[in-house]
Image (cartoon, rainbow, N blue to C red; front, top):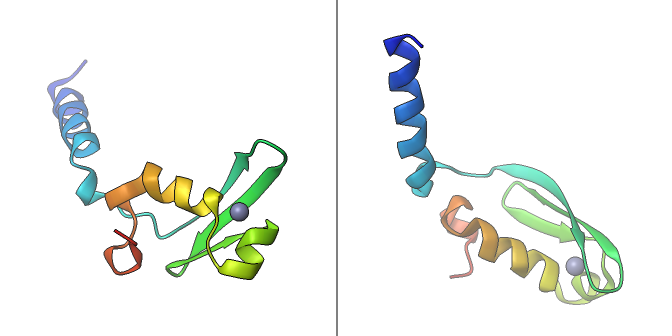
Length: 81
Ligand SMILES: [Zn+2]
């Protein structure tokens, strides 16, 4: 392997550990719940989920689970802490 590629791989490992460098701007995720599979999406700093709880409350176990997984990789202004 050439030295250029080796240095890129080393940099990628450092970037992967320094998660604050990464921001998810939008995505769609399928989450297998205990009773049903749900489609969760994040766009423009806003969550959505196809479950009934989210429709009533604007937050649900599915969006909260993804917040836990992604943590600091979500845009700071929408982080719930
Ligand atoms: Zn949900």
